[in-house]
Image 1: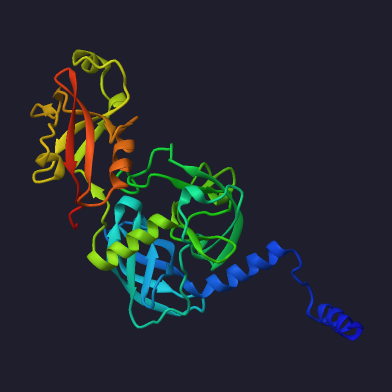
Image 2: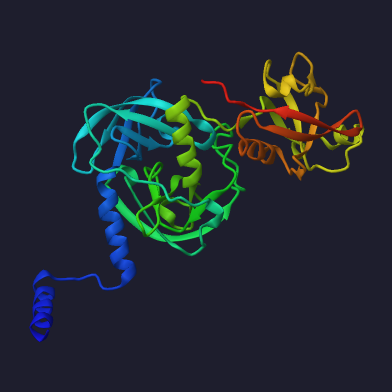
Length: 348
């Protein structure tokens, strides 16, 4: 035994710094496992004068890479670069703008590593747990950073593009440093499982005064399964554009007997949509687009009161196509309830 201890001491002196703390060991193991699976995503701008974009992605199958929709939306000639420097052509397989997700198919390469998702709902993740992310900040890397899970909840900051990520009910927040180029990075627990898909940083670059934002891994995994099977997301879709009541002139609200700004007005109803089939009424506008009369106002979804249009979208998105949803409406100065049978969002 004494000889073994002396040998271990000698090896430590020869090999240099040794990881001792359990969390250090866990982080190092997670990073080493993730590196082969993480790729740099790059492409050329679709429009002349547009900016080329660099982001991150990771293999979820032998030839399939997941990244953010906003990374590849305006790009052509997509490529992915592996951690060992090899570069391969890639193409869009399917997209899910509602949760800011895109699936790519990589040509001519087999994944040197694949990451798997933790089988746990976002709301069950313990705050303060250690998290690691690996990506290509500013195109450099792959580089790793770590922090804690700071929170789980809705994003109160307005999205740069309301059409992207509008169906994410709850986000993960982390203090792990990240910046431009980290979009699409995996957020990993200390078992090496993906708990989130990094989407943005709010409040400051590189985590300095900022908070990292990630789409929960359970939502990402569900979307990937749906996209692989159907080619389109399978969350519930209402088929109506909405406007939050607090965005409307108070005089119009009072004119129809509303005394609160809690709710969302139906502005336009798409033909053939679940909203149209259920008889929802949109707003009336003149030829210049000015609002003449309010449409139906959604006050609750399945009995859950809504604050604004984002609440409606999130609650509906939690359902699946074919589900029946009960909407509490305000129409003609009175409450009424309407049942809507949801559909999948049409393929773009």
